[in-house]
Image 1: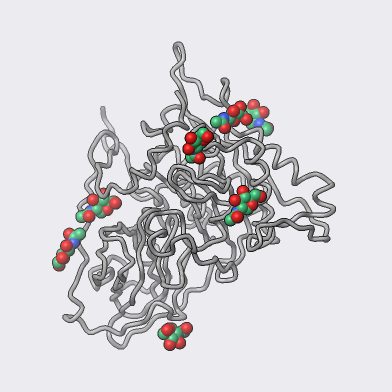
Image 2: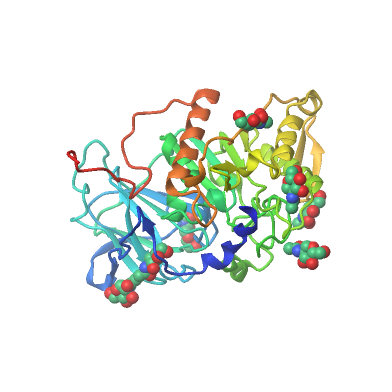
Length: 435
Ligand SMILES: *[C@@H]1O[C@H](CO)[C@@H](O)[C@H](O)[C@H]1NC(C)=O
Ligand SMILES: *[C@@H]1O[C@H](CO)[C@@H](O)[C@H](O)[C@H]1NC(C)=O
Ligand SMILES: *[C@@H]1O[C@H](CO)[C@@H](O)[C@H](O)[C@H]1NC(C)=O
Ligand SMILES: *[C@@H]1O[C@H](CO)[C@@H](O)[C@H](O)[C@H]1NC(C)=O
Ligand SMILES: *[C@@H]1O[C@H](CO)[C@@H](O)[C@H](O)[C@H]1NC(C)=O
Ligand SMILES: *[C@@H]1O[C@H](CO)[C@@H](O)[C@H](O)[C@H]1NC(C)=O
Ligand SMILES: *[C@@H]1O[C@H](CO)[C@@H](O)[C@H](O)[C@H]1NC(C)=O
């Protein structure tokens, strides 16, 4: 059975507002607390969305509207209240995750134009000033196609916001539905893209991934552009982006965030699908341009090209992964891109990609090798891929874990003994000792 032909359901599925979440054969309870308040009943000190104390994570546009997978907002605050008013570009009922300090994620659906009280004196941990002081608030949007707009942020009257310094290292993952977390139980918050960034600890991360998107710049599964075009723009390829920006999205200003130290790219699954008409040569040509563009905006980044995995089939009396039978997807093409960037010819006289003019040019400055290949073969088994052809939560956890170890060994990134949860709602265990 072929994984690829089914990745197409993506865009349609993203518009379903509610669905059942299955967890160990049981329905997960998703009646999250309603945090809507009438702000006139509260005394707040309020801040506009451009307050300098805010650290936006991932992609947000000039109107403070979020894009792509797990975009976030973080800030410190005094007192024990945080409320957020969500602007008109917020998609109604979007599920957000939020937390104070190292406490577990909490979830709530937010409403367009409403004010939500996310932290109050009842919030676990908010009155504990050790070891994090003042408290830090963090929010992440869980769904890639939905998004929120920050209109204003409120803290208790007379209390104030505090800037939280960025972590010293930065990672970005560029991908499609496999990275965005489609069909993960908490979507972006269950994805390996998020799990890699958050799981490394002490790392800022951005998951620039959108379901159905090709690398090659063309219409794929309803996405009007491929990543070669879209990654340099602020917004993604969703219909809400099209409504706001038509075919003139804002350029992304890469200087708004610290430059990535490591960029992981997982693209090509949608390109390698007969529905999308991308040729192998076209894919290789534009993959090189994308890497040359990443190298231009993040000259010091190490870039990891991930190979692709496909589904498993039940063959005879066992399961076999498609990659070891006939259909290997664009894996040889990705490997050839990796090889190209490690040739003496390239490194002696590197080529960069200028997205504004959509052209490449020689930088005339030698480069050290910066492109790496991460072989995914053997990471997953058949039951790590769900019935909708995407990794299960456990599959995502495995991919994230392997990447974390790869990055540690390859780039000497120290892993810290942090404690706060990464993957929410994964505390399944056996409380029966005697059966
Ligand atoms: C909250 O969001 C989840 C995830 O998108 C969705 O399944 C659920 O229906 C939403 N709840 C409400 C009340 O809108
Ligand atoms: C939450 O409660 C408010 C009224 O306080 C209501 O207008 C809104 O529809 C509710 N939201 C959800 C998702 O149930
Ligand atoms: C925030 O935006 C307002 C209104 O556009 C502007 O007057 C103010 O200078 C901005 N503040 C900062 C810190 O950029
Ligand atoms: C997918 O990639 C493989 C390996 O290069 C190639 O043989 C096959 O024709 C490709 N299929 C499509 C639809 O791109
Ligand atoms: C792919 O090519 C076929 C034949 O030229 C065409 O009918 C179809 O619309 C194309 N699909 C896309 C997504 O470009
Ligand atoms: C950029 O150039 C490539 C070919 O090199 C082309 O496929 C793509 O459509 C161009 N993008 C734009 C926005 O013109
Ligand atoms: C990836 O790993 C598989 C399994 O170990 C191996 O067969 C394959 O040759 C590797 N690919 C590359 C390009 O090294």
